[in-house]
Length: 472
Image 1 (cartoon, one colour):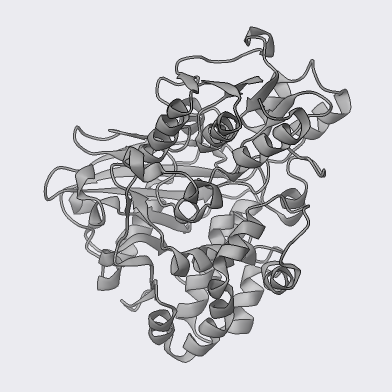
Image 2 (tube, rainbow, N blue to C red; image 1 turned 30 degrees about the horizontal axis):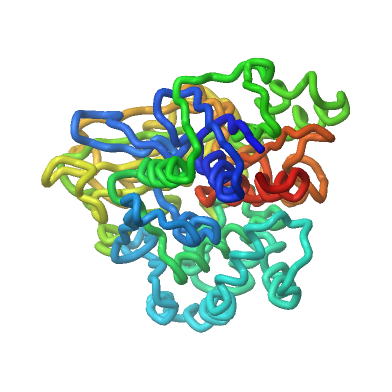
């Protein structure tokens, strides 16, 4: 059997590896000059300063059941950890800190420590079983029904509701709000708590690491393993029509659902085409990369020891910002995700200098300039930050899409993450990867289990094809 994979992001490479391991001949075609999709790195600001194009911190990468079974370390993938996975500063100069240790996290949260431990400890204790379950298509037979029922009772709640029910003080509430805001949902929405729980579990179980040498090292390690299995990769090969592809038994599309609908239009039913094109987008992001001449001058010293820092203040402030985005309004005080890679990986900047990676959520395809709002949030918790800037590189939604067509309108999640569109991703089906009765398979983050650098979308799509077409 032979196949073509369109797109060389982590999901496309995961599908290719899964097929190659089963004896298929696999050819990967990538439109860009470099492979990796969202997991790429480049000098965006100044020579010698290496920045991640999209993904930067990878708890789902180090915790992925698929990646854990691959010898990626043989190809040079090395995970780097900061002292703390995450810090969340507050206006009084303190910070809520997610430690690897639940006990230390409990101690830092003081009055809410016991409640935090009661919430997280049982889930962290069974993190591998949970990861194997929630990184599956949701419509599957669970081998841990009681565990998933316990998790589901929490995960299906709103983040705001869970935080206010569990915690009495602002540090714990704000910490959970920042975790949950990665969902790009209003914090009042059902199931907005799910991603907060998942990221917290992974933070304790495996940390929030970054790859030494940039996110591109993940893609390069996957690519080298694929080549070792006999697969081939061609860059600079944009696919605009399926008719341009060589004769093959199956085609895998590591593309957005909207790109896949256009490519497959003549091969699938009008009804399915309407479903795919009607899949709603998630919000967009506005991203800034910085070259800095010194570390960020945080008021809370713990922030200087955390590769990831969440900037947004209180639960109420973060909830307001995310609600504004969902309602189509540009937030005046956005929730800002900030990564300072060089505190864990100094190879990414010249000696003594640093990089920072930031973004905030904005309404879909907005052309708003969020530079001032993002830097105001950084200055709020790190006065004098602006004096450390050597150069900045701004990525509006349109620029993100130009650099990676999967980031349609700056949507980094492959589509909406609300409860229904987690279940029906991209449509409600026991085989959400196969496009109708064709041998076309969608394997991007527009399929279960959704966004993140974990490869599981590609792995599951390939396994579905193998169950239908057999091994080579």
